[in-house]
Image (spheres, rainbow, N blue to C red):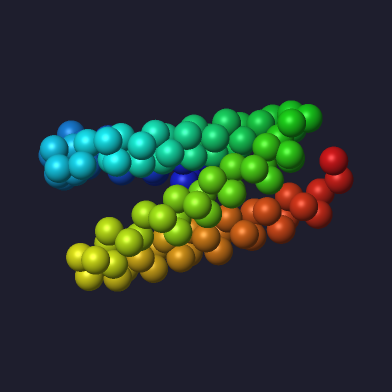
Length: 111
C-alpha cells in the first residue's frame, strides 16, 4: 500500500511542479505511462487493503499486483539512467526485490 501511495504522491508532485516536460514533447507516450503507473499504484493499494482485511481475493490479487510493479520498476528507470540519476535507478532495483519478496511470501500462504 505504501508503494502505491508513494507512486501517486510522486506523480502528483511532478505534475504540480511542472517537472514532466513530456506532457508537451511526448504527450501520448507519457499519458500511457501515467495510466500504467496509476493502474499499478491503485492495484497495490487495493491489494494491500484486501490483504489487511483478509479478503478471499487478497492472496490471488496479491500475486498479480507485484507483477505490475515489476513491469513499471523495469520500464521506468531508463529515464533516470539517461540523466545519470543512479540513486533513483537503485531505488527501482529495490522495488523489484521487494515485489519478488512479497510474491514469495504470498505464494507460501494457503489459498
